[in-house]
Structure formats: C-alpha cells, structure tokens
Length: 236
Image (cartoon, rainbow, N blue to C red):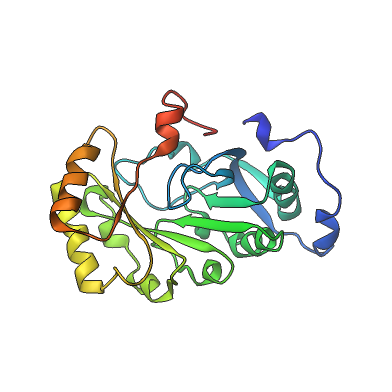
C-alpha cells in the first residue's frame, strides 16, 4: 500500500464534524495526490480516492489491482486524509466506486469540504446517489470493452450540464458505435463528451482525424498521466 494512504499528520476538525455514531467503512485501494489525468480538468492538481471492487471486466482495464484487496477505512479517516492532501479537487474512482454502500456518504462528506468532487463511474450502477453532490464522469461502455451490455441507459436522464460522458474506444467499430449513440440519445447538448483511445489499440491521430472529418462536438481525451509517468502503474 502506498505511503500516501497513511499521511503522517491529519488536520484537526474533520472528524469532529462527522457524527460520532457514524460507522461507515470504505474499502480503499489507494489515496494519493497527483494530476487529474483525464476529463475536462486534465492537468489540474487533484486528490484521488480509489475504492476497491468492480463488477465489470473491461478488456482494456488498467486498474485491475483495484478489483480486490484494499484496506477497510472509516469514512472519517478517508476524509481526513483527503483534507491533508488537498480537497480543492477530488476524484472518487475505482474499481467502480458506486458499488460500495458507503460511497454516497463519502461523496457528500467530501463535498462538504467545499472543493470540487468528481466521481468516475462505469455507468452500470445507478448514479442518483452521486449526482447531487458531484460532477459525474459517466463511462459508457463500448462494444470493444466487452461490457456494452451492462450500460444502465437510465443514467443518461440524470446527467447535468457540468457532468461528462466518456467513450473509451478500441477501434473504428467503437467510434461508429459511439457516434451513433450520440445521435440517437441526443447527447451533444447534454454535457461535455470525451472520446478516449485505448493505448496501443487506437492511434490518437487516427481518432482525431475521424472526429474532424465528422465534425463531432467532442473532446479528444488522452490519459495525461500515462504520458507524464509512463512507467508507473499505481499512484499516478
């Protein structure tokens, strides 16, 4: 487990604001400070809370270490560590964070710190519990992921203008599928849309050409942290 999961000091006050009877526990894979690697806030300093567990098995997953293991942590301790590292911008991710029963309580507690909270979700879980307090980055699963049949389409009705939709693309087939979904679901006017090429499967320059050719109102979304720290698998 990374040392950043156990900072040497915690600011006073956070635990005092949480109810004494609160016994919410989260299974946490890692907590660390880095740059936001994706989304419209890519490049900004960010504290990441990676929760353990995911019911999906995407073909291109690069965080399989978060499927299991991790450490049970009280909600108050998670919030204290986030505040110690910086709560100006916080990303709750996984795994699939919304599969954990305590996720809604965590998201609200982080929002109460006053910064911006984002939650990255695979989209197969109801996002209602997260939508009120966070910016949701909804990852609609493409055919190339092997998980397209798990998309919970009802989640699209809960999105707001400051949320984001991400399509992770492995091929031309995925691109055409995403383009069709955008048209059928009229997503262009809902919120920002991100097209993300899978490394070593889809050339970003090729994807950029398709986007320009079709004049799609989407953002090319590269994994910035993979360029800055190409040899690091965790903690970035």
